[in-house]
Image (cartoon, rainbow, N blue to C red; front, side, top):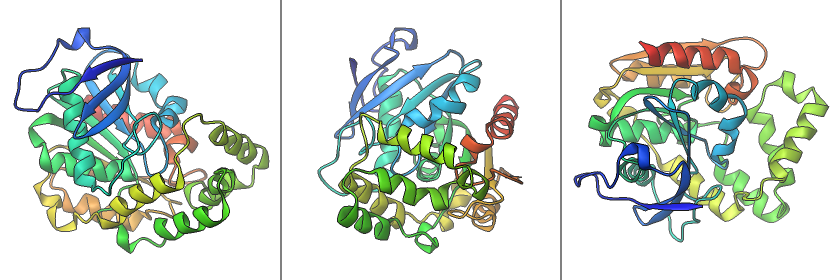
Amino acid sequence: MTNATATSSDEPMAMNIKDVPRSGTVRTNGQELYYEIHGDGPPLVLLMGIGYDSSLWTLQQVPVLSAQYRVVLLDNRDSGRSARADHPYTVADMADDIAGLLDALAIHRTHLLGLSLGSMIGVEFALRHADRLDRLVLAGPNAAPARSAVDPISIWNWVKANDSSGEVFGGQQFTWLFSSAFLRNQQAVQETIAMLASNPNPVEPEAYGRQAQAYLQFDALDRLGGIEAPTLVVVGEQDLLTPPWVAREVADGIPRARFEIVTGDGSSHLMPLERPDDFNQLVMKFLAE
């Protein structure tokens, strides 16, 4: 693993983008963060949701997006190969992590695609670092998740009491992350649970709890009008965690936003995994405009 050191955003870039290692860690904002780079072209940062690491992007999105973009994967703080935090933090802190990562990777401006918690980080990044953002894609976004029907803190408390291995935790999440069509396919369910359970860097309940606290404390409803970047808001018709009306509210608040709903089987919160062709096509078309 190669290490790079982040610099503050108002200092010159540490190296030429061509000299940046394709994977490694950066230290920024008091955190050690793991990243990977796939492909070449305009930069595109992908941000995963609560409790998961960037490896999920490699299943369906990276092979397509990296054909035209320099795809930057980041394990959010408290997930994957990034360091575990020793104190509470906010979505704003996580957005500043992105700015520090860009400094370390010699990237001045980027496109950004975020799913779930990743979309909240994207919103905050767009507000705090507008000069570093080209286009923004928000998948399954929620600008005020404390209103969500699914309470991550309750799930976290249940996991701590009942599931030290994480296997049941994975299955528990499936009921609100995946579609009913997926859940009826027991082979697919068991294969996915096994895949998550085999992750060598699982998110511990305590780390999940810190992400969940940041998630629930986030509220940007009254600030969405400050987002200047062209934005694509996309949601699945069957998304239980962020129903279409929640995502529509986000799109309505952003001046230059476009709203898209993916309908039919597989249009869940993890629609990018269940309906990758439709999702990838929407993203590629939007980024190319």
